[in-house]
Image 1 (cartoon, rainbow, N blue to C red):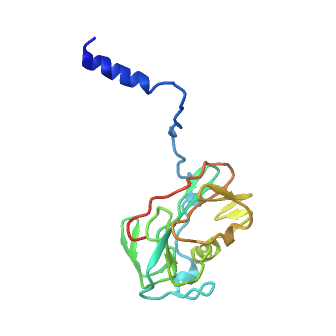
Image 2 (tube, rainbow, N blue to C red):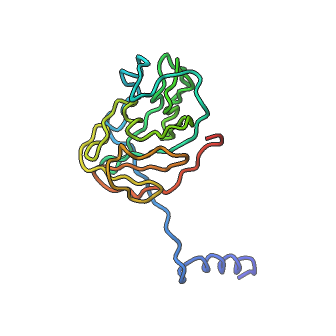
Length: 194
């Protein structure tokens, strides 16, 4: 065997087996569910009319915002957190992204990634506030259009109690599940500026 080939083989063998097992990477990721229940629309009647929701008003422009991230799973499948939650029409869209609208609430989503832009206005907002803007149910036994015990994780750790009370803090990574477990991510890499 040539010296370069021997070094390559030795390097490959050094990575196999041994005492310090590396965590394995997932071989597949949950897919989006098969029908419209897994893709709820973003616009509630209150937001469409720019009416106050739970003390939140649709204003233009708003204070500086920070990011929180939300992942939803039902029956071990991804439920899309819609873009445009908390943004009143008429909306300016660019593909799946909502760039702007008539006005925005203190909580909004502009992309279908689960990133929530939260107004840094001193108030503590919760998942209950976001779901009220979205017009979707959330509670200990409800998650959007799904029924069953809702499990919540914040930063990868199980959180008991009513999921509506989970605060949307700066860079929070929140996972909600109903109908089966998907290992939660403890962190999310936020885009610059959030």
